[in-house]
Structure formats: structure tokens, C-alpha cells
Image (cartoon, rainbow, N blue to C red):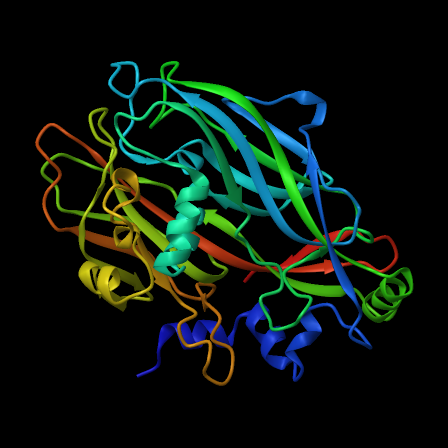
Length: 389
């Protein structure tokens, strides 16, 4: 029996381009030698000083070299959690307040990470790495108050293929890049419970000697555009789940190549923002069941669930389920994602472990990490988005 994902991957333009390359490092920076690289860290203030809750904060990326790390740093003061003005469950303030982080160029979004996408990235880390990141983002409990300084890293990928200089942008050559962060005060933290204390963006660059940088530009841009593999978030429409219901279905509109899929069911009443436990997840399409998972299977043995975290980190970060389509990436051939390009009417169906409580509602969220090919023109450094399906 033919597998629909195999057939769809076979006809995917993005996967065909990657598979056709005998030398996979063609999708990362090429060098004729191993240059000496030093690191430089720069702290940048928001453009025009415009920042705060319910704002989109913009930072210009300095043209210092190969951009290898982005960290959004901000400070807030949280009111006493025992006050009725605080509407939140225990969680991580660095995620509670971040709607998305994106890299843009000439007002075009090159890559975006939503809160859900950051959750899925956290889920693939080891427990020790996750605990460190939780500490950096400053976890809060119901009775917490005081000042918090949070560090939220960019966890995207630029060129996911093996190379010592992959996962970077050459800011000394490309058109001007910006980092934009949408900060929201609603939802988990609201009603004046949070006071903004300022922000900055911390950039780390890999820098080279001038002659090495010229050689890098010559190797990568003289003959043809440089092609890079990038990822960005694709958020499906949400589906409401009525009281006493146990199942919900969301159509998949994404027709691109997906690395991982995050699924959660959020109980949306004011008294609780907790994600509900899922018993089964089924992907359907092309008139058949594509694949089925038990919720416990993904939670205990699969690729990621926030429930693995310390007990005090609860609420909205519990019961986050991640289906990872790259689990076979060590096998020969392309297995870095699944294409939905030619799967007819794909959908996600979930069955809850227990019904939505009487008088309450819930919402099914589905978010993909979608792969895209970018091309950087050698004539002017302009970044173009080319293929995602």
C-alpha cells in the first residue's frame, strides 16, 4: 500500500531540490578554507524607544557579520499573585508575554516564531536544557510578585543542513534585517498586573578577518544566488469545543513541508487556562487515516510534551503534544519533514481524555514549523522567499 506522505514528498518541489543535491552543504555557507572566527556580542535598544505591553518592538540588526544568536531581554514587575487583579495560572512569564518573535527584511517576514512554536522547540530539548531555559525565562507561581528579568532566545533554524557555518545570516552582505517582537499583556497576565520595565535585543556575531569575509562572499555569491533552508510558524484556524464534548477536528490548510506539528487543547474560561489531556491524535487525508498517536505515547515516549517539566511549571504549558516528522533524519535520503502538498483534505482529529467540563469551552490549536527555501542574490544581497511546498 502506498503511503500518502511518501507520494506527497516525492512530488514536493522543496524536497526534490534538497534530494537532488549530492553535496548537502551547498545549502550553507561555502568556504575554501577554515577561517579564524571570533565572537562579538552587541546589545541593541528598540527603534525610537517605542516599547511596552501590547506593543510591537523593533530592533535593527547591526551589520557586523554572521548572526549566530538572538536573545530578547526584557524586565517587568508582576503584582502580588494573591490579588484579584491577576488573572494567570503558574507558568513562564517569558512566554506568557511573547506573542511572536520574527526576523524581517524590507517589511517582509522571513521567519516567525509564535508562542506555540517556542513551546514545540522547548519540547525537543533535554530536561536539563529545558530547566535552564525555564529559569532564563523566569517561571512564576500563583503567589509570585516582584521584578523579573527574562531572556527569550530565538530558537529558529536557518539552513538545517550540516555545515559549520549554517544557522546564521550574513548581515555584512544581506539587506538590512530587523527583529520584531510582539508583546501582549492580555490572557494569562492582565488587568494592570504587569508593569513594563524596558527591553533590549542581544545579538551574537561570528566575525572574520576582512580577507576571509571577502573569500566567503566570493564563494557564495559570485556564481549564483545562495540558497538557504529556513523555517517559520504556520498557524491553523482554531476550533472551538463545546461543553461536554470529547472530540474536535481542525482542517490543515498548510500545503508546505512540515518539520513538526504542535497540538494542544486550551480550556479557555477565565478561571483556568490549562491545556486538557488528549487521549488520541489522528491525522486524516486523501480519504484515509494517515497516522494515529496515543496522547500518552507522545507524552512518555514521543517527541516532546511540556509535562516532562518540573511540577511547579504547570497550567498552559502542560499537555503540549508535538509530532516530529524528522525522527528518521539519520536514515538515508530526505526525511527532514512531511509534505502536505498533495494530500487531499488533510485534518487533525483529537479525542480528549475526558469531556470539557459542563458550562465551559475549549479551543483546539494546531501550529506547524514549516520549511522554506530562501535565496540571497549576489548582486545586492536581497533575500527572496522561494519554495515552501
